[in-house]
Amino acid sequence: MNLKKFSILAVDDDPDILTAVRLLLKTEVKEIITEKNPENLLSLLSKNNFDLLLLDMNFKSSINTGNEGIFWLKRVKELRPDISVIMITAYGDIDLAVRSLKEGAADFVVKPWHNDKLISTIADAIKGKTGVKNKTGSMGGDVNLGKDMIGTSEVMQDIFYKISKIAPTDANVLILGENGTGKDLIAKAIHERSLRADKPFVKVDVGALTETLFESELFGHKKGAFTDAREDRVGRFESANGGTLFLDEIGNIALAQQAKLLTVLQNRMVTRLGANQAMPIDIRLICATNLPLMELANESRFRKDLVYRINTVEITVPPLRKRGEDIILLAKHYAQQYAGKYMRPSINFDESARQKLLQYHYPGNVRELQYTIERAIIMGDGDVLQAKDLIFSPIESAPVISDEADDTNLSNLEKNTILKVIEKHGGNITKAARELGLTRTALYRRLSKYDI
Image 1 (cartoon, one colour):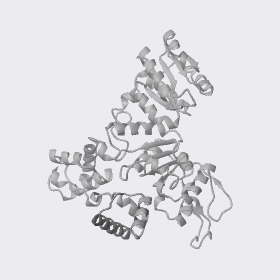
Image 2 (cartoon, rainbow, N blue to C red):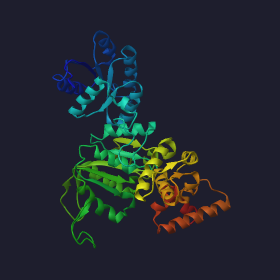
Image 3 (cartoon, one colour):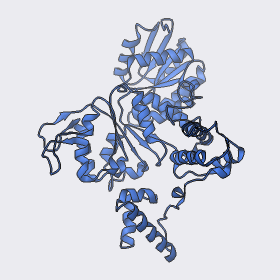
Image 4 (tube, helix red, strand yellow):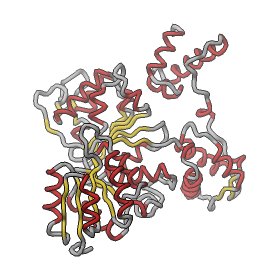
């Protein structure tokens, strides 16, 4: 689109941002006017016929809440409801930027931006083909974001839109959500839409690494560094060089491991075990955990400086029970997938099946729904699934143990359950806590309580 006939106003209290915008757009548009003081914004709009406004989210560095940007956006829309507004935001204000879309903004850009991306965003906003209008689907009108990433619910649309804005940057991302919600799919989607898409995507389940394996797996080792080190080994940081490193279950690593990880992330240098020479690394870091952010920020179990390092932007994935009709969309998707796999005819759901799907609470989230549909396809006879065909896993139905269990019978039941689950996982506390629906700290408290 030719922008030569359009006038743009940019308002930001950072003179460097204004200079960058002016230099970029002076040859692209008819007129670019910059203003540092938002108090002059309404006056400029009333005296000039601007086609688009670039508006900062924050003007008072001591507050830095983004509310200033929302305030001025509302005032602008009262005076000039026709003008397209693009919000300028930092990584940490993504949630506020998404809120600005609901207040009438056409789109937002994350600084530092890529010049081509900013120009295309301006062109789309002026044409009226904005993120708000496209959000009826995930991105560009679709209801999915790749394999199994399906949804039309508002919470998922916000996630899809965040991914589209975050992916082209190099911001570190922390993905929060219950087990089975698809955090790994979101990590993969971010990588595939990033500027590193043609480089490696390396996933590590750090929660499953023992303390002795942690350094060797992540940082690599030289031959002879320890007893079983029979040859040189490249660590996951080196393997992901130039691409994306995805650390899953980051909340389950010990404090000593956190300190080593923080050093590497701060210095962007990695040293193999048994080596003296540090090597530079260039990675985009994505982490995921099933712990709530407030629990992750508890310094008795996780270093707060590491939380800040990995959490430039966060994405919270909703549990399936909060996604409404997305449940039916996903069920149909898996029905089609497994009907093809098991050479069955096209599968539909009757009303009783639909109601059962919508009313279930899904402690295992999308993963549980997937296995339920696969089981129904295998065991069902006809091409229409009924409620009786949908059998949810008893593994996920076990009640979460309460912190307040005082009754003797309940205490015995709790103790026996803990013993069975720990035995099942060969003494692995992390896996046992995960199945019991507890944090490791809470499980340790119970081990002490029952003298296990």
